[in-house]
Length: 396
Image 1: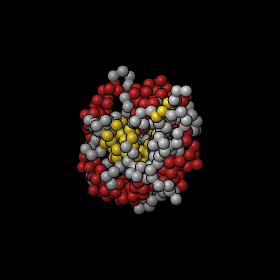
Image 2: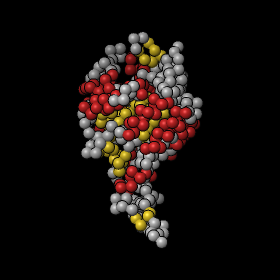
Image 3: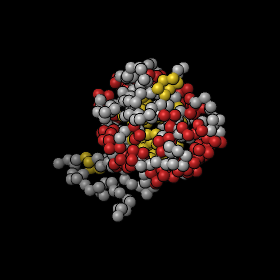
Image 4: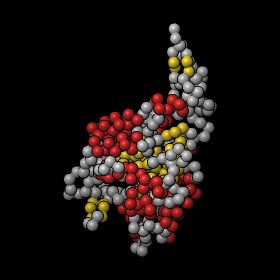
């Protein structure tokens, strides 16, 4: 009988089963500029993520929504931290109940999802005052999102409370947070105050250390004022910008002017769009969303889908846009997302899952998992015999 081939048994299926990696003595998530990719614990890695905001979903439903995301083939979840949700009055902090973002981080761990954190201080227009506390306006001359001393003093005070709480959850510290965004789409803001951005970058580094990957996110027009040396530059765009076949190439070429090496990243790939009071429900077609996603994955890009589950702007937390006129956001934040506001999987979810499944080819990673080539054996072999063994001591 001819000996049968037994390929190396993998402890990792990228990009879908990312948290089954053998636990190394040093956990790491870094940019590999020489090969334009991320490395997770030294292994080539790319995330396919989705946005879900804990403050837009009842706490009792967090586990359900995260599980559905994981079952869609995602390996990470991205979410904001709204400052005004946690500091309703100066020096008064709330991290309990639906505001317990650390319980949400724990649920993400249980769902086997890595975390991309976006703590602001500004998050987005669709949330009350962009996440900034209204009490800031008690100083009528304050200039928000700038290096105004009054604004920076409030920001520093808040982050000196929040970021130390985040520190144990960083990936290299044993947690699940692989990267953290500084500000949000700052290049679209009129101030273009680079002193402010440098101050934030320094503050994040001082409180979080040098190992965590810090990044920025901007639309194509905002890269000039939104990017900063020392922060990894990413871009955001949706299917609406991909009407022509070469548009994605042009958009990523623009990103390369600001981040010449490293992985391509779309931090907000829009699966739908928000709704304004008095207007029809916004939708994005399934073929448009899946085609753009498939093309990005073929390029090897990391992608976060915004939103994967939108949820609800409870109470009066809905924000507003100002596009020539005041446009208030609806209470519903359904977003025409793959998981509906009610938590139901939609045809868009199943279509996205099919696209992701095409890219999760185990055979593409065999050279990395088993560099010495296939092992020939008539009988099954132990993990020790094929060198697939954890080297860290068992936890007590």
